[in-house]
Each structure stands twice: as C-alpha cells, then as structure tokens.
Image (tube, rainbow, N blue to C red; front, side, top):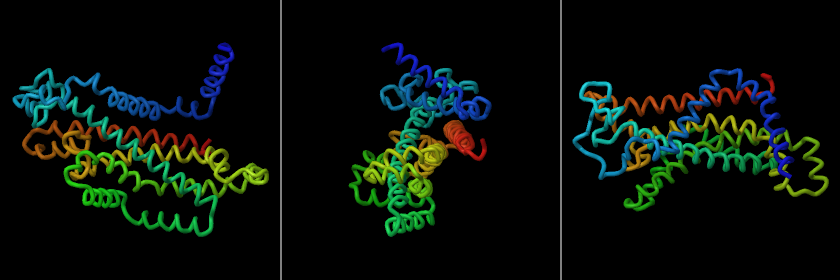
Amino acid sequence: MTENIQQIEKSRLERIFSSDIWYSFSRNPVAILSFIVTVGMILAAIFAPLIAPHDPFNLAAIDIMDASLPPAWQSFGDPKFLLGTDDQGRDILSTILYGARISLMVGFSSVIFSMVVGIALGLISGYVGGRTDAFIMRIADIQLSFPAILIALLIDGVARGIVPKELHADISIYVLIFAIGVSGWVQYARTVRGSTLVEKNKEYVQAARVIGIRPATILRRHILPNVMGPVMVIATIHLAIAIITEATLSFLGVGVPPTTPSLGTLIRIGNEYLFSGDWWITIFPGITLVVLVLAVNLLGDWMRDALNPKLR
C-alpha cells in the first residue's frame, strides 16, 4: 500500500516537472525571481513574531527615548534598530514585518471573497441566461463605471455610519475586506460568464443534462474546473490591486487602525515626518509595498502568458 502511494506521488511529480507550465516557469528568470520574492515576503509576514527583532505592539518594551533613530548605518543610529525607529520608538523593520502581515491578510481575504462572489454569479449568469444574465451583467456594468477605490470608500463610510463609534476599531479589518472584496467581483463574474457560455454548449455538458444530472452538480463538477484557469490569473493580479487598495485606504485614514498598522498606515504615519528629515519612517515601508506589488504583478503576468494556449 505504501509503495503504491509513493508511486502515485512520484508520477504526479513527474507530470508536474514535465508540463509546459513548469518548462515556461523554469526558463523565465523574471518569473522565478518574482516567485522567490513573493513567497519570501509571505513567509516573512507569516512568521513575523518569530523573526522580528522586536515586538512593536508590546508597550512595555517600547522606549520613547529611542524615537526617531536613523538607520543603523547612519550616524546616531543604533545597531539594535537596523532600519531605525518611528516617532514612538518602534523598530521600523519589525513594524514592516507585522504591517506586511496585515496587508497580505487583507489582500488574500478580499481576493477570496471576490472570487467566491464573482465565480458564483458568473456561473449562474452564463448557465441560466435570460433575464437573470441581463440583471447580473447590468449590475456589473454599473459597478464598472465607478473606480474601485470609490466603491470601497462608500462601503467603508456606510459601515462606519451604521456601526457604533466604539466598535470601529474592532470591525475595521472586516469592513475593509468586505469593501475591497465587493469592489472586485466584477472581473471574475464577467470572465466566468464568458467561459460558461462556451462550456455549456459542449458535448460533455449536454450528455450530463441528458442523463438527468442537476444543474448545480453540472456547474460544480464539470464547468467550474474548466473555467478556473483564467480565474487564477485574475486572482494573482487582483491580489496586487487589493494590497494597493488597502494601502490607499489606510493612507487616507479609513483603513486599519493605527494600533495594528498595515503598510499603508505606516506610510501615512511616516509621511507626517518626511519633511522633518525622518525619511526612513515612510521610505522603507513604501519600498516594501512597491517590491511586494511588483513581484505579484510580474508573477501574474507570467501566469497569464503560461496559461494562454495561443502563446504555447
């Protein structure tokens, strides 16, 4: 039994390493580098409590006398704080690791939310057709006429108006995820709808209908697996957009609270001290955000080309 499992795993690995996608990936230095950077930053964010030099949220360990220290390689820098400290004495490197953790968590959660809503509506719209299709697509067209950031700001503002003020800090991350997720479902729905319109007229779907399989089962077992390729490409690119949107909202002061800062919040806090000479407070979080988004975008561009059959 163990030998059979090992043989199955070995055959799976052989298929992966002999596939066209692996060949394309292994011959693309930009894709490899972007993958390494993306995975490295994700792992650094996940294990931030273990690898961060200091705990920026432990008030007992923060000394206000260490505030606004420059990076360690500059004069008056402290080797304990490699990238310097902020106005409260928190280590910049540690706040970046914890801030990236929050930014990635919000980004991944909002992308998953958008995927679930967009795929469900796209499958229903393409398979059912008629008035249902027209209604869903008109909503999508209306939403596309507004920038995603404005939709996220509107949802965030409505939520803050409904929820009591003392609960704003507790629900801010959940509201942010919902706002970014709602603003991004349209791309998934339109893509899945187009693929569903093609797939539902193929022979295997027609055969499933003839033998009496329910529409929900046909969508889940037969059509959904065949439309996931383009969805994964959109999800990768949308992750970068979601991180940027979260950073923008946090920079505007309507994102996560300052007590649990994301990269956008760190940039906003540091921007207040930029012209006073404390450039490191905002520059290093900004560089981290740029590198993360650039790596994810480059990885998404490679996936788009690798999964496009016309370019093979």
